[in-house]
Length: 378
Image 1 (cartoon, rainbow, N blue to C red):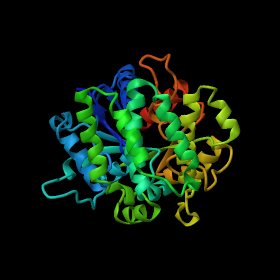
Image 2 (cartoon, rainbow, N blue to C red):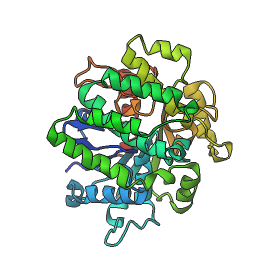
Image 3 (cartoon, rainbow, N blue to C red):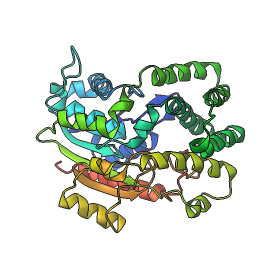
Image 4 (cartoon, rainbow, N blue to C red):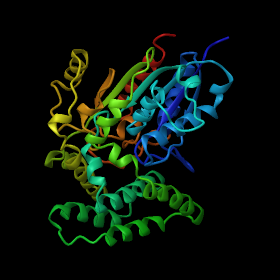
């Protein structure tokens, strides 16, 4: 009887796993199912439902419940964890021999079956963007960007009136001492009003979770993640691999590459705003890399990424952990299929327009490498 592999896709920061027809990992799941079938491998692929901004411990417990409710209970097949962004930290904590996820949660029967942990654009050394989200403006912007993501994936793009107001606000924020938080509230209500009554209720619950429990945010600062790393151990026998993303810095040339579409220009402003805060990584927080990791980065990018290199959300050097499986020029969401390629079926939809140029060909090459890594010992 063929061995059945169990793959769990763990979403990242404020990442919904499934809101109606909106799938965070939709393209990744489809690729995995098709590629495993092509290789004659029996597989179960599960998209984990995680608290959007709960603590890493809370989210690792969500991962446990997803595994417990899946087909992994019924056999002893190998388990593979693939985490995007913060989801990679959830996976690392889940398999850590020292992990304690709460009363009544015994991870060991499943954790000892884990063969691979793959992290994609994960802040293993933290991200300075988290420090920004701790402020009042950052907290309100976090909720708005959560709704922004869902809206674009549902309708394809923001209303231009919202995009113009948000773009104008972010462009002027550094000098705008008289900023009023109600502006973000108004934009939030305008976007929410375009959904059906049923969907609004679902979104209000989801976004309420973002507002009511943001324990994750301070944990993702470079200082917070330092404590996480001190208490989290790698599990012997588990192979750790990472996918690294580095996006083009905001510039006049990058803005031109976004095209003449006003929507693309304004959403590029959102990217520029986030990039400016993600690139301020303290030099003391940049981790040391092994010679093999450094060689992989140099081969991919032509030179070692500098301390300011990032994907718009997470510093590039912060993402390195274990074996570097792929290092690509992409923004934070490109690697999981959220880039601009509407002609593909199902379409790829971009909301963080960075001008990275990442497309389906690169997406398939990247995930083929991940599949190779997952199946390395089979």
